[in-house]
Length: 161
Image (cartoon, rainbow, N blue to C red; front, side, top):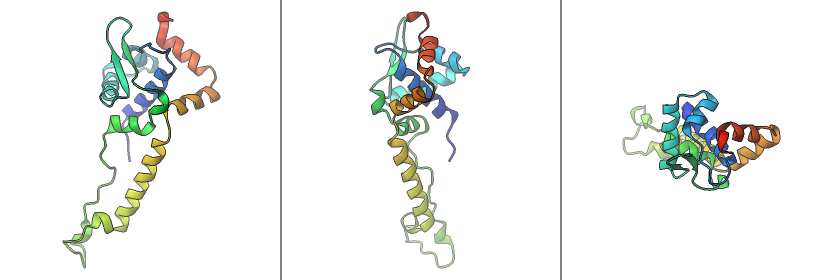
């Protein structure tokens, strides 16, 4: 499975927003500058997070984006699905119907061992991502890199602090 770079961008942006002072929005331009990303493409990813209810958009001076709910309530899976969509990674086409002894009436998506294996793996992957929160990632970063939160907030909030 290959995910687009937007997932990485969105997750980093959510972690950064989890560190912003309560009620403060982070501009997409500052985030793009911070990571040297194309601003218009990053903004599309952030808008997808707004549509998914992960971020809220704040207009006007000092506007930008902020978490729409507590970082503890935003799973990595929430972000992945907002950016990549909800389609399953593996789709069984039932090619066994065409093989020797194949049965056109059989639901091979349910009975094929390859299909079952792939569905089991995707369920495990989704379960793991659903158990990891933006807040958990932020805490891990803070433990490993104690200066990261302060440096990030200073860069992103600029003169508003």
